[in-house]
Image (cartoon, rainbow, N blue to C red):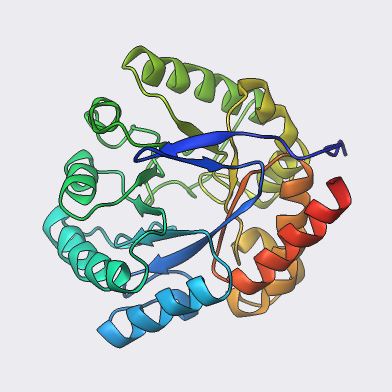
Amino acid sequence: MHLMKGLLSYTINVKGRLIDLGEPQVMGILNVTPDSFFSGSRKQTEEEIRCRVEQIVSEGGQMIDIGAYSSRPGADDVSAEEEMERLRKGMTILREIAPDIPVSVDTFRADVAKMSVEELGVDIINDISGGELDKDMFATVARLGVPYILMHMKGTPQTMQQAPHYDNLMKEILLYFAEKVQQLRDLGQKDIILDPGFGFAKTLEHNYELMNHLEELQIFELPILSGISRKSMIYKLLGGTPQDALNGTSVLNTISLMKGASILRVHDVKEAVEVTKIVKAMLA
């Protein structure tokens, strides 16, 4: 296993403010959904949303990822109208508490992305589909001029775990990113963050092969986001449920940073912040 010798330094432009990703960032998950896979992250009432935002901020989270469409395997489809309504409610409360924190919106719909940036003041678009589920997404993001998190996935949330197959996992993921990054660059997109998509159209074995080779994504010289928080790659290996997967999450978050990840997308902010401090001390 190849590990980093020091932290990589990237910056992203968030509405004219440069954010230094040489300091590993912890992105707290705010799910304004009724059906996310980890029950502890489902926040629907105003009070639940308020408490979650306050928790992320107080525990040291530097970013918040708000999602109104559950992308767990087999999740129900949600209309764009319903997704937008949930986001309006969530963002109104979030901005009251944390007016300046960078916020990414977890959506694969171009019209939802546009509304989130223009109407709700969202800073970053986080698209699980890499533009595959909405042909207008890339052009929309480039026009909006906001950072874009480009994730690797095959199929849809409804179909992605139905026997995912790769002839050569890392080769296919690297080619996917090479093509998509070029498409975005051609449209004038400046800031791109790569998310290899742990748990999306990947078996248990695929996920660990990907983690073992995560540093290969550095070939693109772009920041990497690792999102493994409480996922099945942990609890299916160790036994138990998402509720039992915090320790395994911290282990994989540590490995992610040692292999060059700049952002950790997590449910458990306090523990992830501790991981970043320990790894930073090691690599200083």
